[in-house]
Image (cartoon, rainbow, N blue to C red; front, side):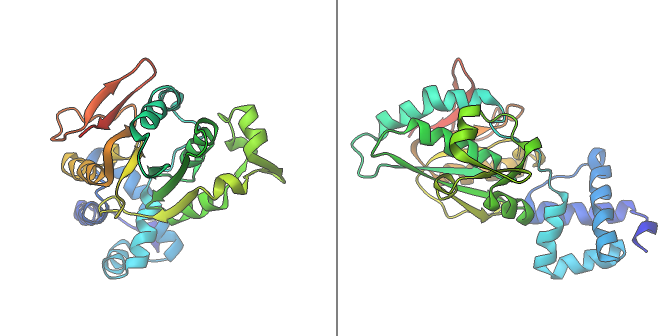
Length: 272
């Protein structure tokens, strides 16, 4: 039944409005084929037609979560965009240690927003573990709209084909070799809390020292991007840092974030 679906212009408009209202993800006519392809997969799984399925996700919040999960793009790898990690090591962490020196807390709070299957937060955790001198500690919240990705990240298991990018000494120190791949060791897993979160909403987090949200807002339109960036601002501490994707920019956006250009990478900071 699902194979014979004819996805009309009216269907497309209904679905893309619902997706936008619920997640901020913006499907344009040029990427309609991506939505149609992923929707057809979902319809085959459910053995349902396109209009009945729309009625279902309009009233069933759990199925809506599953649907949004199915249409998200989860391209990631360990230490993706190495320049950001170089800047983290050589500029951001030294700056934060100077800024926070003398403060009552010694824990740096980090958010990996749109964490996919966990490669980004685990990369951050390994590097932070190497960089922070005692008594400094760190904690990471890793969030995503995909429940499948969160389960995978929380499990911390990666097949041989997915460990590219991990320095050999990190692989030896922070992973155990198991059948078919590698598993993150408990001392690193314990520093990360995986949590479902839709960036359309306030996360409730505050006083964050760093936010990573890379290659996520590219899927939002200008209004949704501005809203997300404002929520990041509200969640971040004074004198904190924001990393977005190398193809993303806050240029022209109504925001108080300052642009920072270093010899390693560019990023943003909240310095008030």
